[in-house]
Image 1 (cartoon, rainbow, N blue to C red):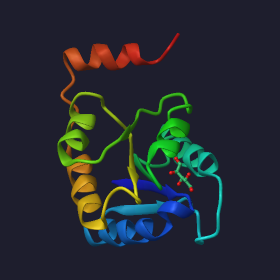
Image 2: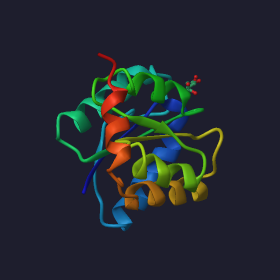
Image 3: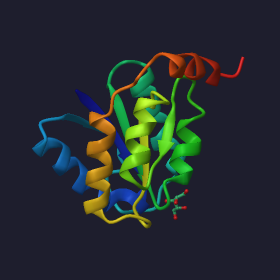
Image 4: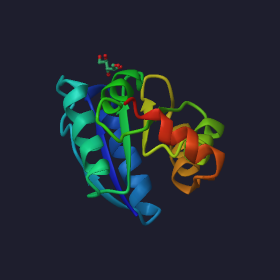
Length: 143
Ligand code: RB5
């Protein structure tokens, strides 16, 4: 499974930790930046990660900013992205199981990296249940 990952400056250090964690867990990772702790604009990164997932270049995405809020709002503007801002493992698992989420968002100023790793694991190992949830997910796209 190939994971697209990105952050702004607020999530830069946490991103490096999560990349190490993902690689240790044998995931393939593509890093869409940012590549330094210098201030940058989270929508630029969020859109790149969202496009990589929707375009099929990567299977799932992970985005980190200070709160996780900015990247989740921005990623959800990319048609086909279902970004979920998660601060606990239950939500992360359910984001996959019920919402077929394809981008996980987290706040580096909210969570420690230990909890972030647990959330990432719950998200990546979660599985969409389909059935009645598929009907609801189909209705998410605003037509
Ligand atoms: C950057 O200071 C901060 O605003 C950003 O990382 C994020 O939290 C926005 O939602």
